[in-house]
Image 1: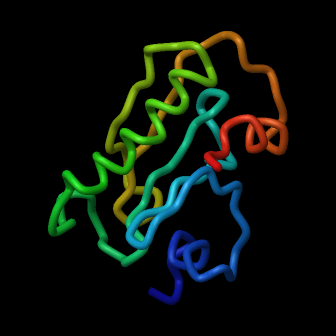
Image 2: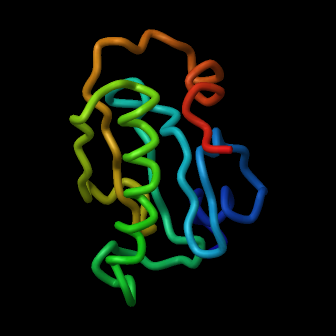
Amino acid sequence: MLNCIFCQIVSGEQPCYQIHADDHFLAFLDIHPQVAGHTLVIPKIHYRHFWDLPDPGALINFAQIIVRHYQTVLTTDLIYAGVKGEIVSHAHLHLLPQTTAISLSLEDLHQKLQLP
């Protein structure tokens, strides 16, 4: 979708702090984080709402890879996940790590959290 910032990120028109990607999904750091490590997980194909996805479980399975990585890297078991407000009309899931051990810039967090 032409005016969708997330579609522009997927196409490479807009930059992001990518954490992980596969053929169908992309995870990147939120540039306006609610907590350090706040990550957005999106489908690469545009769907307006999370519940419009043909298989929401596939996105959850992809997010689980990131959550397990964060649990190790951030040494926390508590990572909230949720579908929130529709500021951007592109299906997405928020991952919010709950830890006080992070006081890094977005660039440094990106280096620490990025999956190989």
